Length: 192
Image 1 (tube, rainbow, N blue to C red):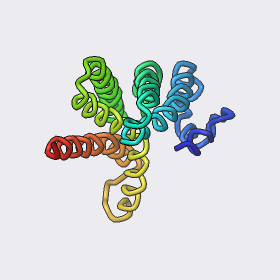
Image 2: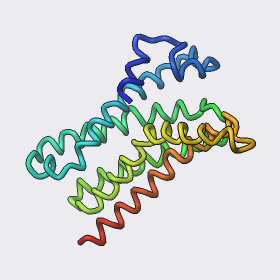
Image 3: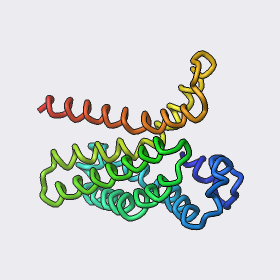
């Protein structure tokens, strides 16, 4: 992901994903939202991965809190709002636009709930909502994985067009992640 993100700087509207977005790449609100989303989502992935290591939580609680605040403020202040702006211009039509709008709203809601439970010192609920929030954060990675898988099936499945693949990967990218998150939460609750 870092390699993909760095490929957009310096700015080139013909690089990677941007080559497919020629209809909006010069639209200033979309361009600003894209740049914000790319930069801040990188921080989210780095901060998020540290939050689930027991060693960090137990031995370095101050760093756990600092990185947690970085994650929460970055999601709520930058990445999710910019993602919502971009969602209105998503390729694939209304199906994909609705998908990314729902993703953005769920991402913000789960992150807000994780914060609320942390403030209340309800650590099990805080952990559960952070798992959900981070599962949604990881949709950027899983979406790309689903794309690779679906393109492998394209020659063998009639009607699996690039547009349909994009619609499917958009939905699978976060819905499957949330299902896995729920399984993890269930497993952790049964362990107690």
